[in-house]
Amino acid sequence: MIDEKLLEEAKQSIIDGDTDVALELARKGLEIGVDPAEFIEKGFVPGIMEIGDLFEAGEVFLPEVMMAADAIKEAVAILNDAIEKSGKKREVTAKVVLATVEADLHDIGKGIVASLMVANGFEVIDLGRDVPSQKIVDTAIEQGADVIGSSALLTTTMTHQKEIEELLAEKGLKGKIKTIVGGAPVTLRWQTKIGADGFGETAAESVRLVNEFVKKK
Ligand code: B12
Image (cartoon, rainbow, N blue to C red; front, side, top):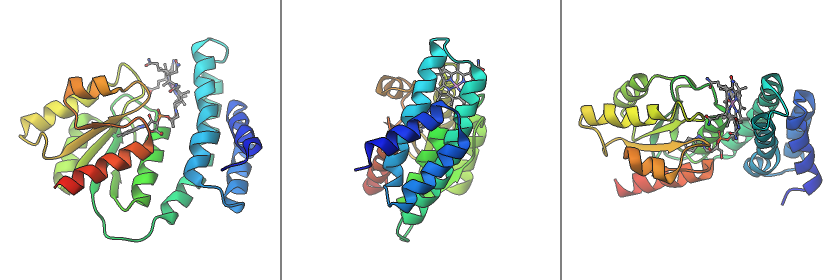
């Protein structure tokens, strides 16, 4: 259990777009031994979600969202490092190609997914953000990946997740390389509609899905 006051301070540091305070709190959290994944999800993420709501309501503007995004990225980078280091060294059980889809610059959630996967012993090839579907599929083939994970945060870019399914189908690889989709607007309904193999609402869910796929292999 993380102290409510610390969680509230973390949330507020993101709303304020205060990178220095966010970093200080992330370090303090690690010093006192909080679970970094829980600290991200219950402390920092609620801050960026609130900024998203305020942006939608027209109460804050893009510069504030950008400042908040910078603050959360830096704090989460430190915590992600700790998550990855906490993973026990073990045999790699799955190879995952991960990317934020083309024309989409949102990569905070994908970064969290990548770290949890690494901590759980998966090999992650993180292609970054704004990645064309063709590049995602080509890399997965070249690297012999078991799973492609794609993140989309805009309703206008989600269609690229469908494109990934189509490219895999063209190569006769649908179902052979498993696909998981995520990102705020992505739903189970969307997963079913485009024929992806899995949908994860959270980073933890993405790990569960990959584990299930490799177990069945
Ligand atoms: C931060 C942010 C930005 C930052 C991004 C910085 C960065 N490096 O990521 C900046 C300022 C760049 C930005 C820009 C824009 N943004 Co913006 N942004 C956000 C905001 C506030 C937070 C997103 C976020 O990081 N959330 C926190 C993370 C942890 O959550 P997450 O990504 O959902 O990830 C979790 C899960 O979804 C899951 N997950 C994520 N990926 C994956 C992948 C897999 C495989 C799995 C299984 C799971 C999984 O695990 C994660 C952890 O649990 C959202 C608000 C919101 N409600 O989402 C708007 C939001 C997404 N943005 C929005 C918009 C409109 C824009 C802009 C178009 C604004 C503009 N006018 O220019 C641009 C577009 C730029 C582009 N081409 O991409 C809208 C989208 C509306 C829509 N319906 O499409 C939103 C919803 C804000 C709003 N309410 O209006 N944005």
